[in-house]
Image (cartoon, rainbow, N blue to C red; front, side, top):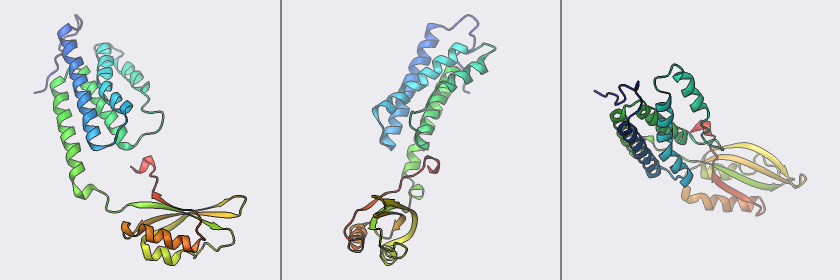
Amino acid sequence: MFTSILTDLSEGLTIGQGVICTFSALGLGILIALVYRIQHVASRNFMLTLAILPSLVQFVIMMVNGNLGTGVAVVGAFSLVRFRSVPGSSREITFIFFAMSIGLAIGMGFVSFAFFMSLLISIFSIALQKIPLLKPFTQFKELKIVIPEDLDYTEVFTDILATYTKKQELIRVKTMQLGSMIELLYEIELKDSMMEKEMIDAIRVRNGNLSVICARRQVNVDEL
């Protein structure tokens, strides 16, 4: 059974309890950061955040433990945590919540349970990355084509896109250079990634060797 080591805080927190909880939080924070780094490319600042966050949450929870205003204090402390200045992906937010949850468990004294959950979720997270069924089968791309304004864009590339792509959809039409140029934005799914250059060369012949950009589609955070 998982029990709390902070059974009685009426007389205060002992040095031993504080040391165990603090070093446990720091150790598990480093573990969480390493697990994230194994699976994804991460910046140094984000790795540092994941490593330190459990100990900070643990510190806040231990300071308010036993008070009547615990709930209000915890909500207030969590509301001050700004995840990132730029919206992060779902995996980043998940690992931040993971780190905060471990800090919360340790702050309540459930050190053994925090270790158990950290190992379980870390192993499960790494295992999911290895399952082929969870990997994307296709990769959508954005295709930007610049054409002269006198070229009818409605069907000019239909045959080329039908040859090299499984799916294609015209997302946006944008005028450029005071209307003398038009930028077409397609969302495409290539039949064969090895034929991407061949497709671009065919498009360049059709659009007069103007700019053609084929890049990975920018995915909205809500889609991740």
